[in-house]
Every structure is written in structure tokens, then in C-alpha cells.
Image 1 (cartoon, rainbow, N blue to C red):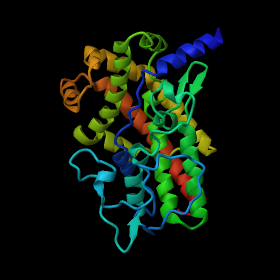
Image 2: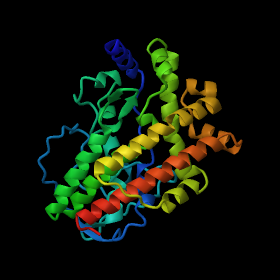
Image 3: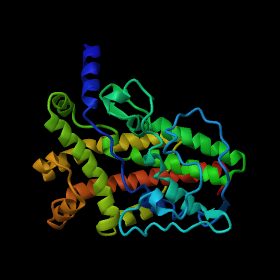
Image 4: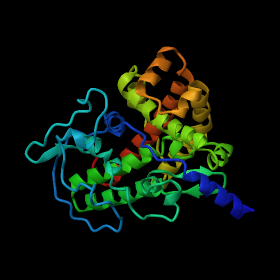
Length: 323
């Protein structure tokens, strides 16, 4: 019986395509503003690491791309967050963390053979960016991706290689930020996933709900009022005993919010989920006052996850002697 349920759950994963929790660069930029030494200049160094982790080398960048805004594709007006070119072959800490936090979405995790389960979601990127928890079933390794780059960052700082210490840390931030997105912890309700195994309409709606949540964060960060910015800036750091505890708490909290977020998206957008929902549609719904509950729940996620990530950053940077 247990094996049959597992097989059924695996079948429905194939209908859920991965989309990124968007706005990493701005989310990170706001999150690090209270850190000491963020204006410290760091010398750009060459990559000099032996890794066991497999990448898509066509999209992996190991050179510095500061000042080349297209690398991290900021939203909004295309100017914020700032991305000036290096000065004297050096960059400030804030810029390294900001521009490289979106890096794992640029293709380095795509087109790989990482897991026998990756065919169930249609790509290898989802293996590294998500951590599904559905009843007793757990799948994928977003938490391991975070911990991998925390350890690599630590190794770089131990070599006094601050540039790669911060650049690897930016990648770690990407994965823990991804796991604060409810749809990176569950693709839909149990019965919706069963339905998706037999209905392209249902699978499409789940895809579009995921994509909508990603774009809703973009809307809050770039096109709405300052509530998201103020929530992130105002979050107070909280601390846990281990790096594993930080990422587990993010996942637990995000997962606990999934049902509320998912229900509200379905309630407000309804049949619109049959198609991709645009930023303009989101704006219209917001102006009509229909997204207040979704906004409140999303800001709650941003607030608590920002507190956790700020605590992690302080904890980690103190441990490697950077603050």
C-alpha cells in the first residue's frame, strides 16, 4: 500500500514545472543592509576550487561579472539594485552578495543527471532548488544545496579568499531564499496532485499558481508599496544552534503557510489560473483590494524568513571572522 502511494505521488510530480522565487537580488540587498562591513572592499580573485558538485558548464560563470547587469536580470526599472563596475579590481561585500544571489537560476543546475526522480518534475534544477514534503514523503535537496555552499564559503574564508567566500555565500542565500517560497515545499494539495496525474488542466493550474506566487513577490518588491521592503529591513535576526536548523526552520514555516497561500490564490484568481497571470493582472487585483489576505500571509513569510536568514548571516560571518 505504501509503495502504491509513493508511486502515485511520484507520477504527479511530472506535471509541476519549476519556477524560481523571483527577486533574489533585491531581497538579498535589503536583507544585508544591517550587516556590519558591507561596504568593505574585497579583491576579485580567480576560482581555484576542486568540487564534486556537477554543473552545466555552458551556463556556469566563474569569472566576475560585476557591472554587467544582464547577468542577474533585475526587475523594476533595470537600475535597482545598483551594479557598478569594479574599482581597482575590487568589489564591496554588499555587491558580491547582491549580484550573485540569483546566480543558481542562470542555468548552472539545468540539463544534468542528478537524481532518478528528476524526470518526475521535468528538469534537474528542481532537484537542487526544492524540498517537497508531502505526508511521509520527502523529495529533492534544496536544503543540501544551501548547506553545500555554506561549507564551500567556509572553506574559501579559511583560505583567506574573501571574494569566493562571499560569492559562495551568495549562492547559499539563493537556496535558502528559494525554500522560503511555499511552492518550493509542496506543489499542491494531495488530491490536486492525484487529479494532475489525469488532467492537464489541473497540472497547468498548479504550474500557474506556482508562477503567480513567484511573480507576486516581484510585484511586492518592485511595483507595489514599500511594505515588503520595510518588512525585510525591519526583521530582527533570530538564531538557531546549527546551519541545518536555520534551513529546516525556513522549510517548516514556509510549508506551514502553503495551504493558506494556495487557498487564497485559488480563491482570488480562480479560472485565471488556466493561463499565466501577468504582473498587470496582479496589479489590477491589488488595486481592487482583493489581495489583502495574500499580501498579509506573504509579508509574514518575508518577515520570518528574513529574520532567520539575518540570524544565519551574523552567525556564519562571525564564525569565519568577517564581523
